[in-house]
Image (cartoon, rainbow, N blue to C red; front, side, top):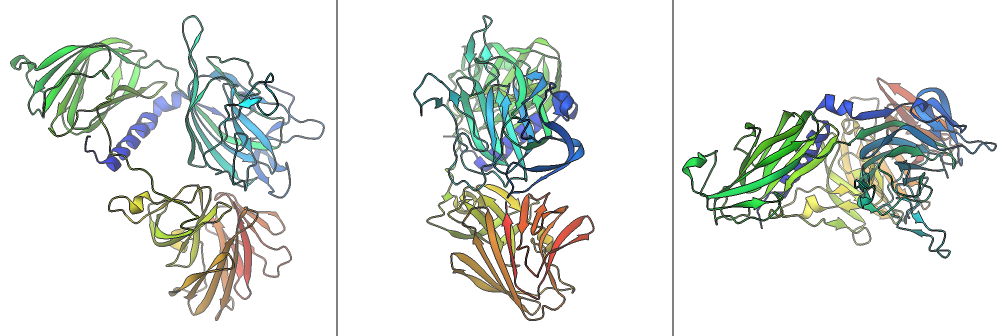
Length: 603
C-alpha cells in the first residue's frame, strides 16, 4: 500500500476542484447563467412575482411577506390561484446548480433538474426522521399500476435533516450529470446526482437515477431539459439562482504505448541512451503494465484529442515520485513535486502527448492522477491509476446517546479556534457549543452530533466538527454572542457547569456580576430555550442576545437575525423587552440585566 499523507492529499484534491471550477474567471463567466428574474422563465398565469425583500413567520402556515422590487423570485399563492410551475427558457444537460430558497411554514415546492428529477423543497423543520419527500430528498419514481403502498419507489431520503426554520434562507448546491444516449437515441447511461449539499452539508452522493421522478415533464429520460420550479403547492422564494453548464466532450487519450526504465530519475533523461526494461501497447492509460522492481520511470506516448479551443487546467499527482506532461512537444508540467498544476491554451484537434511517471520511492506502488477541466468541462480524469491506494481514515463519529457532551477545540469559519468548547447534544437532534472561557453560546446546529476524527485519529489535534448545518451566532472578538457592557474591561472567572432538569447550567463571574446561564433543547425540536440570571452590579447594564447585519421584527416578541439565519423569540408580555440598536454596520438585540432574561433561539 502506498504511504501517502492522506490529509495532505485531501488538501490537494480540494485545490484541484477549486482551481478547475474557479481558476479561470473568464471561463467561469462564459459557462454560468444567472436566473435573476422571471424573464429567464416561460410566462405563465401563476402567482410568481419579483421582490426586494421577503420574510416569513414560523408560526403562520403558508405565509411569506414580500416587498416589491428586484433580486428575489417569490411565489405567493391565493385561494383563487394555487399557482403554476416555473419552467426556464433555456435547457440544460450536465450542470452545477446553486440557489437560496426560503420556504414558508408548512409549504411545499421542488426543484426539477431538466424538468425530470425532483429535489424536494419542503418545510421539514424539527423532523428527526426524514423521507424522500422531505427537504433535500430526491423524490420517488412512481408507477400507478402497482398496488397501494408500492407505487412510489427509488426515492432517496437525505442522510440527515439539516433543513432550517421556515422563513430562513437555505442554500442548495447540486452537481448533476445528464443521462447519456448513443447515436440511435438509446439511453446508455443513467442520470446521476454527483452530490447534493443542503446548508453546507453533504446529504447525497453519487445517486444514479434509473428514470424520471414523479411529476416529470416527460415520461422518459431526455438529453436536455429546463430548470423547473414547482409553484402550485405553497409559498416559496428563490434568489441567487446560478447554473454552470458542462456540455463539452472530455479530451481523450488514444494510440497509447509505454516504455519503462529501471533506475532513479528526477529529470527527463535522454531516452536514446537508455534501454527499455518493458514496453507495450495499451488501450487505456489505466490498464496495468509491467514495470521493473524498485525505482523506475514509465514513459507513456500517444495522442490527445481536444474537443474545443480554450484554456484548460491540468492537474497532475504522482503518488510515489514525480512526473512530467508534454502536449504537442511543449512541457505543461516539469519533473518536480508530487503534485503540479498548470493552465494551457489548447486548440481543437489531435496532438501528440507524452507523460512521464517517475517512481522515486522503491517501497511504494506507482500511481498517477491526471485531471483536466476547461470550457464547459467539469473536473474529469484523463488518467486515474488503479494501483495507487491511499491510507484513508474511517470517521470517528460521536454517538450522542453514549457521549451527550464533549469537551474539545472548535474551529470557526474565520480560522480562529475555541480552545475551551463544550458541545451538548439532544434527542431532538438540536445541538450547541459553548465557550467555557468566555461564557458564550457561539454556535447551534441541527442533524448529527460530532465528528471527532480530527481529535482522536492518530495523534489528533484536539478538535471536533459538527455533523449538521451550523448556525454561528456571533463574533468571537466580541465574546461570540456579543456581551456588551458600558465599561472598558471584562474580567471573566468560570465557575463550571452542571446538568440540571434536562439542560445544562453554566456559572461564571464577569466584572463582579455572578451569572447563571441555563440552556435546554426545546421539546418541540425548534431550537433552544435560554434563561440568564445575573446578580451583583447589574444597574444600567445590558446584554446582547443577538447580533447581526440586520435584525428584523417579524411580530411582537419574534425577531429575525436575517444574515445569520435564526430567530429570537421572547414572551410578548415580558417587561424586559429587547431593543434593536445599531452599532456601525451591525445591529444588536439588547435586554436589561436588571431582571431575568428568558428567550428562545429558533433555527
